[in-house]
Image (cartoon, rainbow, N blue to C red; front, side):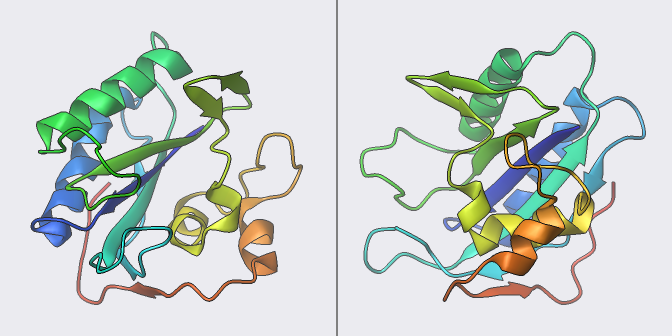
Length: 169
């Protein structure tokens, strides 16, 4: 199971995120894509004055020709396709951020790629949408489910499901 976190806080985020969710279907085995609701979330570790985010999560069974590395490369290309420019400031506002959170039970730890995502288990804006699509998924290396991680999380972050937003899957 592949788990991807999506976020946007620049441009028409409430349109960008659902469109990106649908674009991710090209990496999924047919019929396996599951999409969370959209969540309005507070910016975390962002420059002062950053807008709130629209976040979501998708999970799917990856097409057999994909590896974590090839999928990550495709996700970065998709970010650019949706208008993301070069990152000049860490966590600067962006049209689309796609984080490869989990890829089956694969573990990677290189200079430019860590899997599972190293900070995701401490972030409400990741865990709340992820728990909608994969609550029983065990986080690699922790032997805890996403729901268990969410239940144990202590944070001041705000994450509110956005009303009346339907995203197919």
